[in-house]
Amino acid sequence: MQKKSRIPVLRGLAALAVGMMALAACGGGSDENGPSGAKELRLWHYESADGAMGKAWSAAIAKFEETHPGVKVKFEEKSFEQINQSGAMALNSNEAPDILEYNKGNATAGLIAKQGLLTDMSDEVVKRGWDKLLSPSLQTTAKYDDRGIMGEGNWYGIPNYGEFVSVYYNKDLFKKYDLEVPTTLDDFTKVMDEFVAEGVTPLANAGAEYPAQQYLYQLALSKADRAWVDRYQLYKGKNDFKDPAWTYAATTFADWVSKGYIAKNSAGTKAEDMGVSFMKGDFPILVSGSWWWGRFQTDVKNFEWGSFLFPGNTLHAGSSGNLWVVPEKSKAKDLAYDFIDITMSKEIQNLLGNSGGVPVAADPAAISDPKSKELIELFGKVNSADSLAFYPDWPAPGYYDVLVQNTQKLINGSAAPNAFLDAIAGPYDENLQDQGLGD
Image 1 (tube, rainbow, N blue to C red):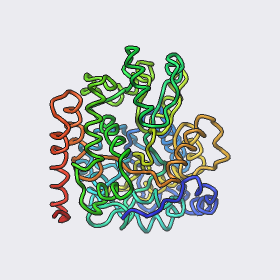
Image 2: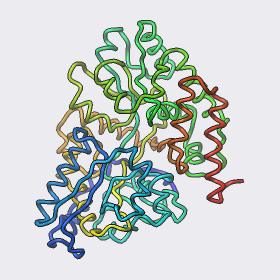
Image 3: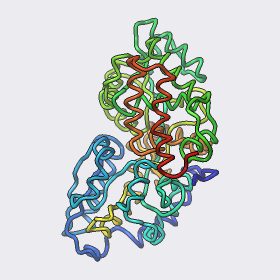
Image 4: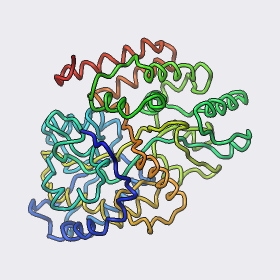
């Protein structure tokens, strides 16, 4: 199950040399086309081309083809929603790729590991030294037991970046209205009141996808502790959806909509549209993941922006990044492992770090971009304080859709907070019953 303490990612960077030597010895595709004899590596991922991971994975593909003469990478771009909704079906067919990026957590990677759709990579992890490169906290989402619960068991995926949810803000708009960066939730509320008074909706939001539920989860975490997270995410005790944290989250979220902090018409908005609206300067604040950082670094041209942790919280949504997984039906597993090796190389990790991502195996001295350093330092604060609290949709299969549908009802006012909490409690409890973990 979840580790009691987490070793900071950045602390681990200093010890990477030994691990990278192991990688150099084991990986990189030096042995012709590998024992499978495959001439093609079919690869899926869902990172945008101009984001940090998209840039890094494109470079990794080029490096793979350079080091594997005669082998071509057949890359297919998928959306996060495509993989989340139909990934298991694809992996259970002859259309399965040889390697793909997959969402981590009990309800996603854990579920398909339990179903036997993923390759147990435990031996390969030790052979190639990946376990030496990943801190215990980052290993949590890579290992799953035979029930599909993360934290212990065999290795079914490899994460090679970290991520967390923070508050992005438009510095120019804060300056225009003479506002300071808030350090408490009360101050955050006052800032949003000021924007509303000026006729500006403060929060960019997307009710049709993950962002709205992340606002809700951040509010719940403001009243939670590690034991609360363990009850909800790891089933260590009874989770109560009518406890103070959940009740506060639902009532405060609904209150934020009624006060105009969140637009009622954002119920049908998708994440991409939310991000674009922030980049256009339509909203002064966006609460979302570090996966936006590289995109903002590249695409925001007309204003200065920054980021701060959700004010007052000691816990924050976040974890290791998504996983590289190898389907059981892959016909080129050896090549898939070589590709993972390349993504863990310093060359690719340094590129990831300098492009606005959070690398797990970079050379700190090679991260030269000031904005990228700011991100990595912010993640270091969260990780070193044992503050990563995973994501709200992880506990049960299909729970992402449950949260989307019901958070939309909070936004458009068709469900009151109590009804919302009842609606999200049912599927959660049913999953516990299915796993033999219920009362």
